[in-house]
Image 1 (tube, one colour):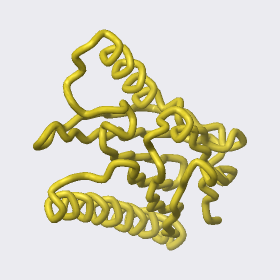
Image 2 (cartoon, helix red, strand yellow; image 1 turned 30 degrees about the horizontal axis):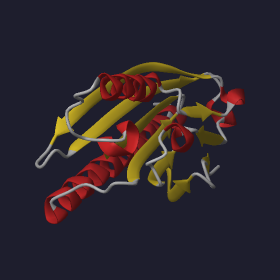
Image 3 (cartoon, one colour; image 1 turned 180 degrees about the vertical axis):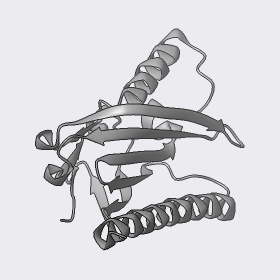
Image 4 (cartoon, helix red, strand yellow; image 1 turned 60 degrees about the horizontal axis):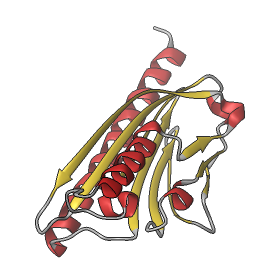
Length: 180
């Protein structure tokens, strides 16, 4: 039996377990916070980023008001246009840029909007990413703050090849420097 291959398989399996635990923990914490406080936070979003080998996942959760500017059903033509433009921007992934040297591309994405009580809505977007040179992925820049002025901060949890860390991003600090 090749022990190097066995170690790689074990390391990969361990990374996946840690990644799943981290993402599940973040989701449970968000759900618990939502249930405990009865509302989401305007001005704040949460982001999870995981890089394992050359595959990455980036998940953003936020109140709709942070992106669209309101949470009620769009009623005027101006509101409908604003909502459409902002949701298209969010779904496109144009609001983040991975270090160019890593040669990454979005391979898929999922989006959902959940309507809560009292006209509160949450947005969830999940991007699957492939990187040709993942070791060169040193940072991720976020333009979401300039594209969505109601957003004040993003709480980030990230895991890069088994190394976990947290960060807080804002308009003045919109670049996530990844640990290496």
